[in-house]
Image 1 (cartoon, helix red, strand yellow):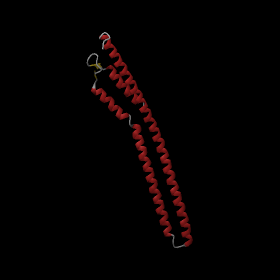
Image 2 (cartoon, rainbow, N blue to C red):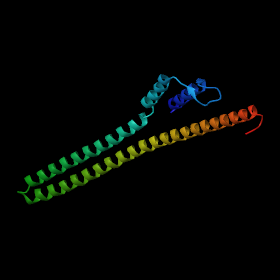
Image 3 (cartoon, rainbow, N blue to C red):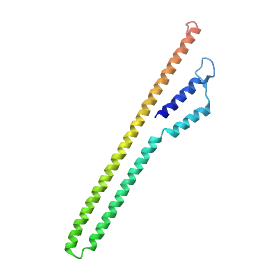
Image 4 (cartoon, one colour):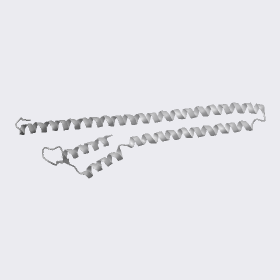
Length: 169
């Protein structure tokens, strides 16, 4: 986040140190390459949190899919075992019980994994949201400061013009 504010400071410094094109004008001459360099650096550095959030979401989806695949494999395995044991009623009864336990345990594990993955993703997304909100607040503050600066400058220029005209409109 500090790097982002450093880039804003660099832009302000560039604007402050730029030469005016005409006297009594707000128009300035800036080095286009410097502006593009700063913008490029901003693009390269700011979205890291956003990229990290995207990777976390993808990882979350991957974990859930892996859990589903494992659960389905365990269910199929349990079903296959149950079919093989149908010759003997007692063996069939025990196999059915075990299959049910495996299915319930698998469902519980899949549910736990999904909930843990969702909690983790939510935690990372909340952190990312806070970072973005802070960035937005900082940008709004910088924007407010720039507006105030330009308003003051405009007022000074207007006052200077009035003095030049001897107070006449």
